[in-house]
Image 1 (cartoon, helix red, strand yellow):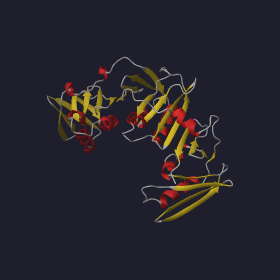
Image 2 (cartoon, rainbow, N blue to C red):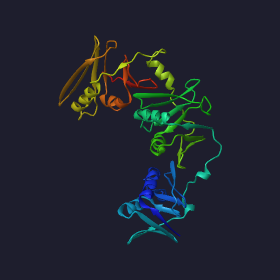
Image 3 (cartoon, rainbow, N blue to C red):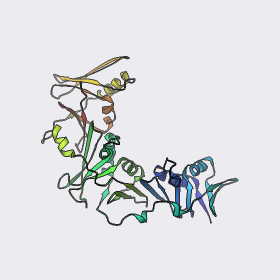
Image 4 (cartoon, rainbow, N blue to C red):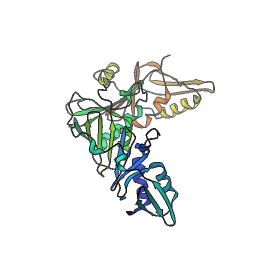
Amino acid sequence: MSNQINRAYLLKKLTMAKPAVSTQSYIPILSNFMFSGDAVTAYNDINAITVLCDTGVHGCLPAELLIKTLNSMTAESVLMSQIDNHVLVSAGRSKIKLPMLPVADFPFSFERISKKTIGTFSMNNIMLKGMHKCLIGVGSDTSHPAQMGVTLDPMYSKTQAAFYSTDNVTLSRFTFDTDMEIPGDMNVIMPTFFCNQLLSLANGSEVIEVEIYAGSLLAIFDDGTLLFTKTIPDLEAMDFPSVINRYISAGGSKTYDIPDVFEQAIERALLVQSAESFKTTSATVVNRKLLLESISKFGEVRDEMSYSGEDVKFRIDPSRIKRISQAVSKMALLSTVMLFTDEDESYIHLVAHCSY
């Protein structure tokens, strides 16, 4: 069986699936793409991605070798010919034979997923943008798996849901209008890989359907792409509302426009501390002036700017401020945290002070 296919198109589809290819060698089949005729699937024992791609091939091919083969060719199209236990990839006078394993050896199939959903919800562009902001402060400590992703609270209020994330030093919340079919007392922890791939694979999709199962999540895209991830059963999310209420009064905290020179001041603080493993900047507000001071063995920097908030003094890690600077426009310098928000305050980001 042979099938002519556009090389760039095939590479694009394989690149979409590649993040789910295993980088470990302990189960060799997981380093393969599984071709099922009209689709390609990658699976790394936790996550799976399937993209529609009509190759006519039925079998498993080594992912890295196939991508390198296609990148080494310059022809507009390639011919994929399945012969016994291998596939011949041809482009002009160039040919390469790739070993192929049977589809039956591949340990994952979307058909095997339990059909009993716990809940479903739809992701739109507003929610995707909010998820992107929450990923700025997501945790990476494997000893706190509940922090290694974005948590969905379907019942933030009667008409709104919320995304939360934390790395134990910062905390983000994004609220949005919704009407979800999820039990109100159930928070869904979406792993970081799943969230990143939702954003990467969205590709202009107006709506992405997400199905929740016991121990897994499945996202279904407009173009037929499927994204699967295992989740940790019975993993409990942090009580985010309580944590936020601990630092912000019930009526909220008054925020002020971030000074125009604030971002540049943070850049200079990082510049002077570039060689320091632990970065810290002193922040002092007195008489409507904000003073930022940073000192290291390479020198010191001092920036002063107008700020309308109350008098306060604390230390911050400027690297944690730098990473969210493009996502916010207002801030409040409080006694125990820095509060950042976007213009309509649908997104808030808390940054804890450093110890003196």
